[in-house]
Image (cartoon, rainbow, N blue to C red; front, side, top):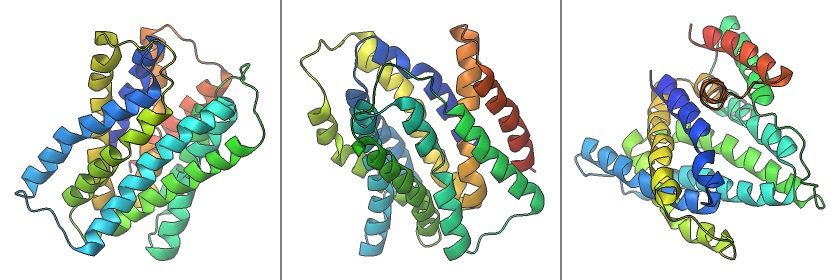
Amino acid sequence: MYALITTIFWGIWGAFIEIPEKAGFPATLGYVVWSLTMIPCALFALYKLKWKVEKDLRSIFLGSMVGLLGAGGQLILFQALRMGPAYIVFPIISLFPMVTIFLSLIFLKERAGKRQWAGIVLALAAIFLLSYQPPSANDARGFTWLFLAIAVFIMWGIQAYVMKFANNTMKAESIFFYMAASAILLSPFAVFMTDFTHAINWSFRGPWLAAIVQSLNAIGALTLVYAVRYGKAIIVVPMTGLSPVITVILSLIIYSVIPGAVLTSGLMVATIAIVLLSE
């Protein structure tokens, strides 16, 4: 249930996040808004904990590591997209569940049946296809962007593994609290990365609309922690990675965007993967 909520919320978030960005509100400031929308979710988590967050060094380290790997990867992604082509960067990063699966199999001894393994493999293929971006005029400059993309790929893969590892010894609500704190802590870096030489839309279609859309992202992050707590990381992570299915379908309905052959193939493969993983 939690994995499904995350997938749906992130899928809706993906369909609408471009609206404030195209209206003139930079993605870097969108990150700042997202970090602030994590606060209400963190307060909910604290309420569930009866305001008694775990404060031992191990819990602080693990919770902060989950947050810094996720939020830090997002900031690095901004730079990777500035320097390199999105049609290569996104497919590379989209396969980060492979890292989570490898680490979970080796260190957490997680296992899956043949049907679920088929779903995992198809999910990875679908995530790759759904992350496809058509080539644009954005020519790559050097190879720094490639190393940045690989860094995000590794960071997000490790983040999901650490999230599952931490859930074995601490409460999910404490993990999310430290995730939110880490996201806010990195906000000044996002502000520093913002190009203020260009006009920024401060109207409703800017930060306020971004706050509404980013709230979906924040709630999805909270339910992801619960999904990883109760489910196997090797299944939950690939499943939530299929959120672009929702994004593509909504884009088709709202923006009349006709998916190409690659995206259509991704949707078909993802549908089969979801059926297999949900068994």
